Structure formats: C-alpha cells, structure tokens
Length: 282
Length: 104
Image (cartoon, rainbow over all chains, first blue to last red; front, side, top):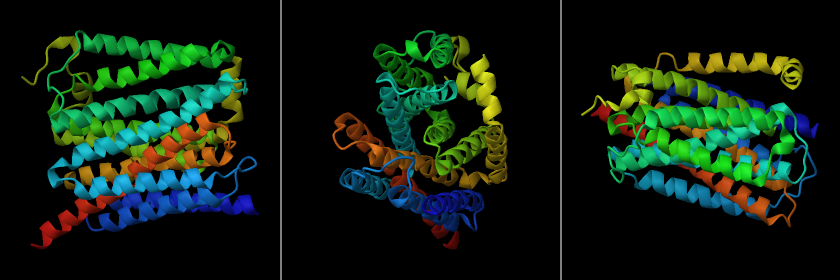
C-alpha cells in the first residue's frame, strides 16, 4: 500500500513534467508550463523524502534538510541577482551543478562496488556511463559559463583538439565496456582515472568551440545532464528520474538541432566544426 | 556477450518504454518558436535536476556512520537543488520579462 502510493506520486510527478514541457513550448502557456513542471518537481522531492524506499530507511533528515536549504538559497539568490543579459551563462552554470549531482551519485555507487557489492553488466555500464556523462556536463558547462562570461579566452584551444577528443572518447568507451564485462578488474585507480579523464574530456570538448555557438552547446550539455539523470534513475530504479531524464535528454537534442537551424548552422559544424584546426569564425 | 544478450532479454519491456519516452520527448517540443528556445532550455534544465531525488534516496539509505557516503550525498543534493530551484526561478523571470514586453 505504502509503496504503491509512493509509485503513484512519482507517476503524477512525471506526468507534470510531460505537460509542463509541452506548455513551455508555446508562448501562451509557457508560464503555466514552468509552474507545472516545478510543482511536479516539488511533489517528486516530497515523495523521495517521505515515500517508501528499497531498503530499511535510516533517513538522516538533518543532512538532507541542510543540503536542500543550502541548494534552494543559492539557486534562488543566483536566479534573482542575475542580469537579464547574463541568463544563458547562468543556465549553463546551473546545468553544471546538475551534472555534478549526477557525478556524486555515481561516485557513491562505485565506491560501494569497490567494497564488494556485486553488480551485473547492465548496472555497471549504467553507473560508469552516468559518471562519465555527469563529469563531462559538469566541466563542459563550467567552460561554457566561463566563455560567455568572458573569463575564458575565446580562442583557447589545445593543439589537435579534435583528434585528441575523438581519441579520448574512444578510450573511455572501450574502458566502460571492458570494465562492465570484467567487474573484478575495477580498482580505485580505475575509478579515479575515469573521473579525471571524464572531467578533462568535458573541458577539451567545449574549450575549442567559439563563444557565438555557446547557446547551442549549452542546450547540448543540458541534454547530456538529462541523459545522466536518466542513467542514475536506472541505477536507483526510480521512474521519475528515469523518465524525467529521458524527456530532457530527448527534447534537449531536438532543441539543440532547432537552435542550430535558427542560426543556419549544422550540429556537426558547431560541435566538430574546427576539425583539422581551420576554424571558420575568424 | 551472453551477459549483454540476457540483460536485453530481461529488460525488453523497459527498452520499449525507453523508446516511447525518447519519441515523446522529441515530439513534445517539436514546434517551439525561436523566442522560446532559451526559456525552454532553462526549464528543461531545471527538470534535469531530478537527480536530487536520487540524492535524497541515497542519503536516506546511508548508515549514519558512513561519513564519506553522507558527505558526497550531501554535495549531490545541494548541487542538484541549486539546479532545480535556480532553474525554475530563472525560467520564470525570463518568461515574465517576455510578457511585459508584449504588453507595452
């Protein structure tokens, strides 16, 4: 009974997200859509706080209350203080925090596996992918934020960055699959190495992209954070995380393409446009 | 390889749902006008803060003497909450700015 009500609340919360996103995409209903999505989120959080869990709850409500209060305060102040012209970089910064949240969850899970908790291929691949995506969206969003804010040098570029990025991506993919098939090979060194490589990839992936393309990159990174949240939802067998994440991931990709079209650019041009080092924008 | 095949077999219904959800996500915002790109991105970004739910579940299940787990869980909840609260608030501001412009 208790766990059915929990599931039902998560379901309602997911439906709020769907309708909220739908309304956000039309000028007349956008404000209501945002409020609806926020209501869905509040319901989801309340359900997570007081609903049934997969195990015996310890609760630690003190820790959770402080964390929530801190996050709400920082978030609301930042949203209120920001200049109207500085909104895209704030969205990017927020997105980076979302990515960091996913990264934190994945780290805790992996530490559990290091101390001997057994996991199947599917679960391991999911956790490792969540770690990679969370880390990439974290550092990537910070770089995008820095570039829009003008802290970052517009032309900062690693040599052969396009080739290095493809190589890095390949190495990470192979490592993810190899270690998911051979869980016993997972060591602390591997976990730390993967975290470092993923954080670095986020940096080297976004840093060669020009400031004018940043809104598109932010939409793309936002989509990545959604996918990361969905992966975390699989690990926690939590449907609102899973489907909320998928919705953001899928709509984020479409939004990225739409934004590219509005700028008369293709997604490939934006993301790997500087392949071979001849940047078109100068 | 066997592990992969059997995982697919056990989760086939889930894979169906996944495909439907991806399609739904792309379909929902298919007709968004250019002016709404940034608010929609921002609103969707706030929703991606749902990882906060995972953080809460994690901390509720972490033994009170597991300080490392609690610390990382604490950070996870804080970061994700910044994303959620800030994201919805900033979207609201963008949209209200918008409505004012229209009226004047």
